[in-house]
Image (cartoon, rainbow, N blue to C red; front, top):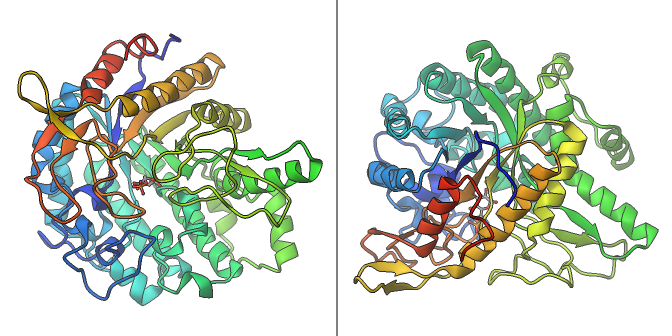
Length: 472
Ligand code: BG6
């Protein structure tokens, strides 16, 4: 197996709204997730409803010590979490933060430190305070920049000695497809124009660059990155029309990394705006603000897609956010997401060739239905060879990319402990190395059990990736 760097940040990732629960505890305000019981694919409710699995999550809020201990047992070097914005600013537009909310993350970071685990913190992971969404229409409103920066400044002030790695927005490009979940935009998706969407995106770009600037001033040793939902797009055929359509589709994603890494809007977007008659309203200072570019690029990777210029060809491959044309050479998981380990090597190379910035894979994994069984000693476990196979195949490709010369600084497997899924808010769709006894009907003891993959990943980390490919 190829050598991973000695400093490689092996670990796992979760998000506050999918794990913490305690949705109304210690002064937390409501977030947009508290009113979407069926995930972002479902309807928005007026009030939180008991069928919303995220209200309890996996009760990470009360069980973080036990959970971090288990992650430490696997040898985690890094743990990616997000901070629930509405724990810190319950409505989002207050002037003073909620002290109890801040204390919770102090305790989480201290627990990580105890085991030498580096926290990787997403500042905004689909958790816009509901009040900002309903009253201001989320990121459509430029005022969100001020609220976000107040929140960011509060986090940097409080945690500057505890957190080195920060991500400004989870999968920032997802706002194009899921404006409510990703951008807190309350207006119905169908009523939004392209002008609206790109204006909201501009606000997020400015906010993200301001966070980078502020972070550099306040924490000289910190590393601040953007986070992109990375999907490699393949041409369905060698037809030049298809190749150009593919380039355009790939740019829909790369645009977000371009602005963050190069500090300005790319030419192809200026052309697109002109042709679509989109006029982004910019303040005089925005141009300079955008020049504060990121230290690294982080990405989620789950699948690749194909593209064609043939408008008769309908999208037939599903993803959690981004669907498209299926690749006839790939198989899919139970939720229709096509599995393509080599796509990860490909996109890592593409991103590195383009930006020459360190890359951090902060999400990757496969959702599956697990079956809890008893092992020979009578311990409950899951024999999840399918998960081991998926992760192993992807990590081998990460090794290949590193061998290609790509600077990959870490890998945090998504949902390292079972959590509520984002797109459908299900618990039966599990990603973890640790099984959580909680089910979609709300039953379960919340007990944690180690799956087979727990021991496998422990071995991978222990050997710094050398055992990959040797065992199953
Ligand atoms: C990513 C999100 O899009 O995909 C996560 O950043 C999410 O929050 C992950 O959980 C997997 O999607 P799902 O719908 O299977 O949970």
